[in-house]
Length: 171
Picture 1 (cartoon, helix red, strand yellow):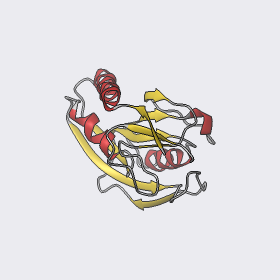
Picture 2 (cartoon, helix red, strand yellow; picture 1 turned 90 degrees about the vertical axis):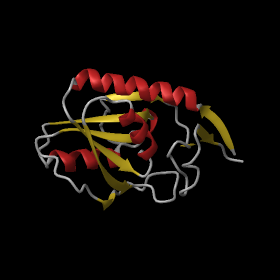
Picture 3 (cartoon, one colour; picture 1 turned 60 degrees about the vertical axis):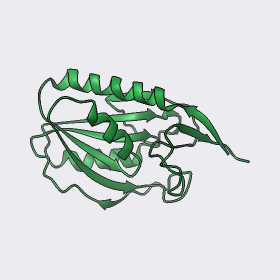
Picture 4 (cartoon, helix red, strand yellow; picture 1 turned 180 degrees about the vertical axis):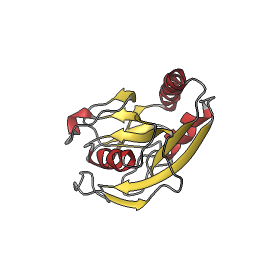
Protein backbone atom coordinates (compact mmCIF):
# COMPACT_ATOMS: atom_id res chain seq x y z
CA UNK A 1 0.00 0.00 0.00
CA UNK A 2 1.30 3.45 -0.94
CA UNK A 3 0.74 6.66 1.01
CA UNK A 4 1.63 10.01 -0.60
CA UNK A 5 4.55 11.61 1.24
CA UNK A 6 6.02 14.38 -0.96
CA UNK A 7 4.02 15.78 -3.85
CA UNK A 8 5.47 16.79 -7.21
CA UNK A 9 5.04 20.51 -6.48
CA UNK A 10 7.24 20.25 -3.37
CA UNK A 11 9.76 18.09 -5.26
CA UNK A 12 9.94 20.75 -7.98
CA UNK A 13 10.51 23.55 -5.47
CA UNK A 14 13.21 21.52 -3.74
CA UNK A 15 14.99 20.80 -7.03
CA UNK A 16 14.94 24.51 -7.97
CA UNK A 17 16.37 25.47 -4.57
CA UNK A 18 19.19 22.93 -4.89
CA UNK A 19 19.99 24.14 -8.41
CA UNK A 20 20.23 27.72 -7.14
CA UNK A 21 22.56 26.68 -4.29
CA UNK A 22 24.80 24.87 -6.77
CA UNK A 23 24.83 27.81 -9.21
CA UNK A 24 25.75 30.18 -6.38
CA UNK A 25 28.70 27.98 -5.37
CA UNK A 26 30.03 27.36 -8.88
CA UNK A 27 29.35 30.76 -10.50
CA UNK A 28 29.99 30.27 -14.24
CA UNK A 29 32.24 27.21 -13.98
CA UNK A 30 31.44 23.98 -15.79
CA UNK A 31 29.97 21.31 -13.54
CA UNK A 32 30.33 17.60 -14.20
CA UNK A 33 27.31 15.77 -12.78
CA UNK A 34 27.57 12.07 -11.98
CA UNK A 35 24.10 10.57 -11.82
CA UNK A 36 23.77 7.42 -9.71
CA UNK A 37 21.52 5.06 -11.63
CA UNK A 38 18.85 4.12 -11.61
CA UNK A 39 17.20 6.03 -8.79
CA UNK A 40 18.59 9.52 -9.44
CA UNK A 41 17.84 9.77 -13.17
CA UNK A 42 14.66 11.88 -12.80
CA UNK A 43 16.21 14.09 -10.15
CA UNK A 44 19.35 14.64 -12.23
CA UNK A 45 17.37 15.52 -15.35
CA UNK A 46 15.23 18.04 -13.47
CA UNK A 47 18.21 19.46 -11.56
CA UNK A 48 20.39 20.19 -14.59
CA UNK A 49 17.50 21.82 -16.46
CA UNK A 50 17.49 24.51 -13.75
CA UNK A 51 21.24 25.15 -13.85
CA UNK A 52 22.56 27.87 -16.15
CA UNK A 53 26.23 26.84 -15.83
CA UNK A 54 27.79 24.73 -18.55
CA UNK A 55 27.15 21.12 -17.54
CA UNK A 56 28.32 17.65 -18.45
CA UNK A 57 26.58 14.48 -17.28
CA UNK A 58 27.70 10.90 -16.95
CA UNK A 59 26.31 7.88 -15.15
CA UNK A 60 27.36 5.24 -12.64
CA UNK A 61 25.19 2.29 -11.78
CA UNK A 62 25.81 0.72 -8.40
CA UNK A 63 23.68 -1.25 -6.01
CA UNK A 64 23.71 -2.51 -2.47
CA UNK A 65 20.02 -3.48 -2.35
CA UNK A 66 19.08 -5.79 -5.21
CA UNK A 67 15.32 -6.32 -4.79
CA UNK A 68 15.34 -6.00 -1.00
CA UNK A 69 14.17 -3.24 1.34
CA UNK A 70 17.38 -3.52 3.43
CA UNK A 71 20.93 -3.09 2.15
CA UNK A 72 23.09 -6.18 1.84
CA UNK A 73 26.18 -4.11 2.64
CA UNK A 74 28.05 -5.04 -0.55
CA UNK A 75 28.36 -2.56 -3.41
CA UNK A 76 28.43 -3.72 -7.01
CA UNK A 77 29.41 -1.32 -9.83
CA UNK A 78 27.56 -2.40 -12.96
CA UNK A 79 28.18 0.72 -15.10
CA UNK A 80 31.14 3.06 -14.73
CA UNK A 81 31.75 6.57 -16.05
CA UNK A 82 32.61 6.93 -19.71
CA UNK A 83 34.35 10.31 -19.30
CA UNK A 84 37.47 11.27 -17.38
CA UNK A 85 36.79 13.52 -14.37
CA UNK A 86 40.37 14.55 -13.63
CA UNK A 87 40.63 18.28 -12.80
CA UNK A 88 36.83 18.74 -13.12
CA UNK A 89 34.29 20.10 -10.63
CA UNK A 90 32.20 17.00 -9.97
CA UNK A 91 28.86 16.64 -8.20
CA UNK A 92 27.51 13.18 -7.45
CA UNK A 93 23.71 13.22 -7.72
CA UNK A 94 21.92 10.73 -5.48
CA UNK A 95 18.21 10.18 -4.96
CA UNK A 96 18.45 9.23 -1.29
CA UNK A 97 21.30 8.85 1.18
CA UNK A 98 20.27 5.87 3.28
CA UNK A 99 22.92 3.53 4.74
CA UNK A 100 25.57 5.59 2.94
CA UNK A 101 27.44 2.44 1.91
CA UNK A 102 26.98 2.83 -1.84
CA UNK A 103 27.60 6.57 -1.81
CA UNK A 104 30.77 6.27 0.27
CA UNK A 105 32.12 3.61 -2.11
CA UNK A 106 31.37 5.80 -5.14
CA UNK A 107 32.89 8.89 -3.53
CA UNK A 108 36.11 7.06 -2.64
CA UNK A 109 36.32 5.58 -6.14
CA UNK A 110 35.86 9.00 -7.78
CA UNK A 111 38.35 10.76 -5.49
CA UNK A 112 41.05 8.41 -6.82
CA UNK A 113 40.40 9.89 -10.28
CA UNK A 114 41.64 13.33 -9.14
CA UNK A 115 38.70 15.67 -9.70
CA UNK A 116 39.28 19.37 -9.02
CA UNK A 117 36.42 19.17 -6.49
CA UNK A 118 33.90 16.52 -5.50
CA UNK A 119 30.57 17.21 -3.81
CA UNK A 120 27.36 15.29 -3.24
CA UNK A 121 23.82 16.45 -3.98
CA UNK A 122 21.02 14.30 -2.56
CA UNK A 123 17.32 14.88 -2.93
CA UNK A 124 16.60 13.03 0.31
CA UNK A 125 18.65 12.17 3.39
CA UNK A 126 17.55 9.37 5.73
CA UNK A 127 20.05 9.73 8.60
CA UNK A 128 18.31 7.12 10.76
CA UNK A 129 19.66 4.38 8.46
CA UNK A 130 23.25 5.62 8.18
CA UNK A 131 25.83 2.84 8.62
CA UNK A 132 28.92 4.77 7.50
CA UNK A 133 30.05 8.34 7.96
CA UNK A 134 29.08 10.36 4.91
CA UNK A 135 27.23 13.62 4.41
CA UNK A 136 25.84 15.32 1.33
CA UNK A 137 26.89 18.88 0.53
CA UNK A 138 23.47 19.73 -0.89
CA UNK A 139 20.39 18.13 0.66
CA UNK A 140 16.85 18.61 -0.56
CA UNK A 141 15.14 17.28 2.51
CA UNK A 142 15.78 15.05 5.51
CA UNK A 143 13.22 12.29 5.89
CA UNK A 144 12.20 9.90 8.59
CA UNK A 145 12.89 6.17 8.46
CA UNK A 146 10.32 5.27 5.81
CA UNK A 147 10.76 3.05 2.77
CA UNK A 148 9.81 5.27 -0.15
CA UNK A 149 9.16 4.96 -3.88
CA UNK A 150 8.41 7.28 -6.78
CA UNK A 151 10.22 10.01 -8.70
CA UNK A 152 12.82 7.51 -9.89
CA UNK A 153 13.04 5.59 -6.61
CA UNK A 154 11.94 1.98 -6.91
CA UNK A 155 11.02 -1.18 -5.08
CA UNK A 156 11.85 -4.24 -7.16
CA UNK A 157 12.15 -1.99 -10.25
CA UNK A 158 8.55 -0.78 -9.84
CA UNK A 159 7.12 2.68 -9.05
CA UNK A 160 9.95 4.76 -10.62
CA UNK A 161 7.44 6.45 -12.93
CA UNK A 162 5.37 8.05 -10.15
CA UNK A 163 5.56 11.86 -10.09
CA UNK A 164 5.15 12.04 -6.31
CA UNK A 165 7.08 10.23 -3.59
CA UNK A 166 5.18 7.66 -1.56
CA UNK A 167 5.74 5.71 1.64
CA UNK A 168 5.45 1.94 1.17
CA UNK A 169 3.29 0.68 4.01
CA UNK A 170 3.00 -2.99 4.97
CA UNK A 171 -0.49 -4.40 4.55
